[in-house]
Image (cartoon, rainbow, N blue to C red):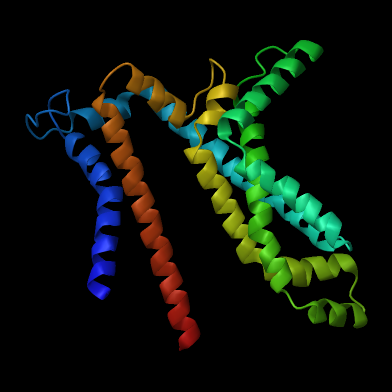
Length: 266
């Protein structure tokens, strides 16, 4: 049984990582195809870092992702607190159903809905070039908020109500209870929501494709446009750089988390 489970894990990891290794391998190809490896070269990395347009798009993507994670964490936390504070279970369930519908809805439908909304606003209020940075950011925040709600709500339900009752009995005001007890207790859920919002924003293509404008691009849409024009090994170089960045970030998080756990044990 153990051998079978190990074999299963090896197969799964192979399926996940072999394409990334394949991309990284050909990013060092001196040729321009992914058929034959003609020789080792940094050519495509040099071209990538000399491509000022691509660097601007990378910055755009990171800024949108960070702002999306921040604002979705704030509004999602407020939404979770609002649902948690409701007295009626029927009302709670109604809001949760509405929240979950947004999560399971296809990205194409959400993207099309945002496109129609921004087009309507543009025509009604005479706003030109509404599709760009703000339309992408608002759309990303909107579809990330329900995810944050689901990250924060379980932490709220885990929190013993006796802590809040004790704080109120000792004279704490509700703002003090919120800032001194509730927020610190649910902080892990808030951070989880922040990183989920950031990840979804970085990863999103379908919604961004509908709401972005000619003057603003994100990596997902740009890579799609480049891939449609044929093989470009700059995509391989960019994918390799991003993969290395993610691996380093995960390792740093792992080291920090491990050192904290060791400190708590000691």
